[in-house]
Image (cartoon, rainbow, N blue to C red; front, side, top):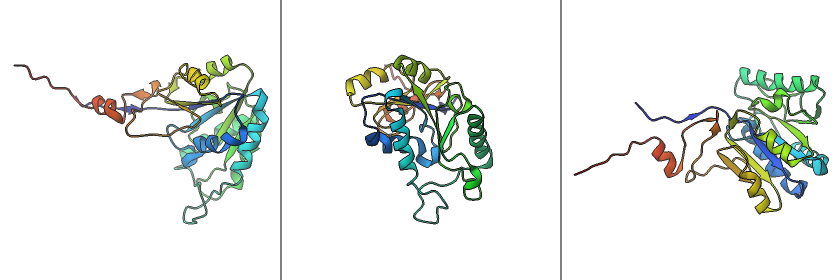
Length: 233
């Protein structure tokens, strides 16, 4: 029987701690979520931000996102493009429309009629959204980021671990030791500190829970798809 590796889902969470500078982390947060328009297995799909700096983080993200051009890739000035197919466009649109109905605040985007023809969906930031909303609980795999407010860090950790997948996660803090302590409590195959989604072929990559089976990359990844041979004599 062949050895195999299965990658089955992400919905990565990021937890911001109250000691960070929102302006300093805005670019890292944005690209953690919007790289390839969010169509990346380990892209940030849920962002948890504390009350103390919630508005500042949302504003910093919105200001940066507004500067990132989206459009046809034949134009060298464009950085973000379309979704890959109609089915995925429908998924993103359904989840954003549901968030609107639930009373979440659309900070930017959320209006597909304003996007270019085809499978383009506008860069969308959704604030003040309930953690139970489908946009948070389901993997949107597109350019729509829910930003969930938290008061208690224990609650944020519980929410981050509260889905049935765990491919990646990240913790954002000015205190590395504190970030590492939180990272160790997150149920994910990879947890990044002050970044999100970076992959190195020398480092094993795989998920926890229902995110998949087996590993890619690194010595561990090679072992996952190989068969040891014992020669005894």
